[in-house]
Image (tube, rainbow, N blue to C red):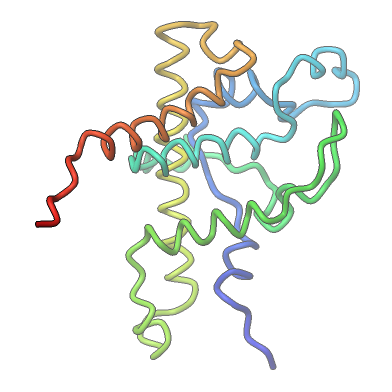
Length: 191
């Protein structure tokens, strides 16, 4: 009997997010929880499925290297009801292509940024489920920071993300901050 890889176990999971972001972030930017009768309104949405804005929020948290724990109250948390292994598999609106590789990049980032003792995992001292729980917690906390970041931007300027390149500018700012700090350093003299 073949055992599942850590990636396969993780991909079957469905991350949670705080319900407080449902109306002001998720439903604002996504077709999340829409029926076929609301297609006219949905055409104005930037993203399709709710997990797409979760992915954006995750990368904001990842690149800022900021986590925000989710509320401990289960009734204030929710999931999309769609396992990670299904994210980006379906061709959708506007000729968008599936993006299954993105899941692998997310997983690699989680492995790099989560303090899982892989030697203990290999020895059976911790279970694969425990390791995946740790990866999921990191994923949810990065996304939660990203949702908080987006909420703050919208509070300061309700139209902030409605510029055609607003999300691009957020991600380009990560590169600019890295480039700026690298440019500020003086190279060491070689003599």
